[in-house]
Length: 145
Image (tube, rainbow, N blue to C red; front, side, top):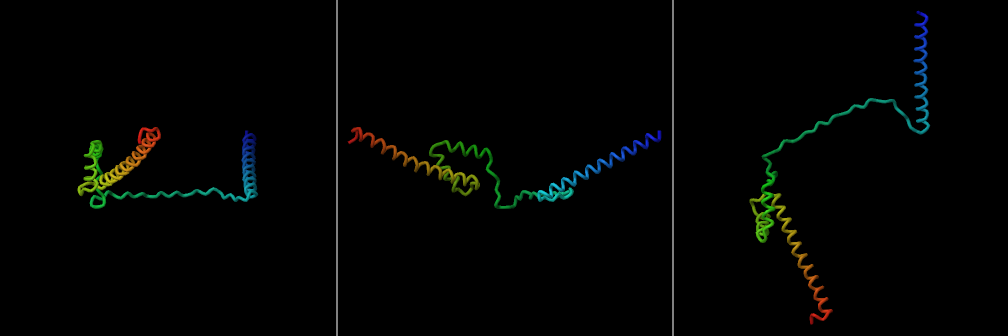
């Protein structure tokens, strides 16, 4: 019985030595291959990770540069007024250049006035081109003297 136990222990030791030798040979071959390729492998080193703490500054109510945003209901009313002819132009001027209007709404109204001016100028230019084209066609057909 003791003989079997000794044989098993010897067998396990021999097997462990063979596995260790095999691992060492594989590592040596890998290092040789990587050095042949001009690369150098370093053993694995555990890298430390650092956590960066984020700081959020609290909302400052005393700062005069910050103002309360325009409410959803106020934007809905502004959009509704934009659908009414003539009133929309008057109200855009009031909101764009008035003293009691919030800055974001004032900038929006100024931008809308600029777009309205651009659209009016383009309408006159394109209308003039259209009228000149119609007049040329009519003159060519003899309808216009």
